[in-house]
Image (cartoon, rainbow, N blue to C red; front, side):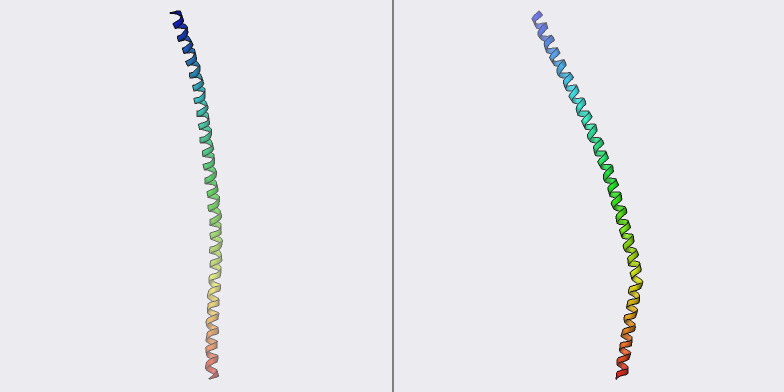
Length: 98
């Protein structure tokens, strides 16, 4: 009987040690999980910031291109008008030559 008690105590101590080891492993896993979540959040924030910066940059480029287009439109109109004037003059010159 005493021998059985010793065996049970030994098993109990062994299982207690295993439980402590598993608890430490679980705590370590929770800690690593939290670290990974924080790193993931940090990366997400950095990604959002980068996308925001890219959007600002693209908006600036679009505004510059719109400005250039708006400046070129009057020039194109003027060039078209000069071409028409030149064509009219050429037609008139042809009429005078005949």
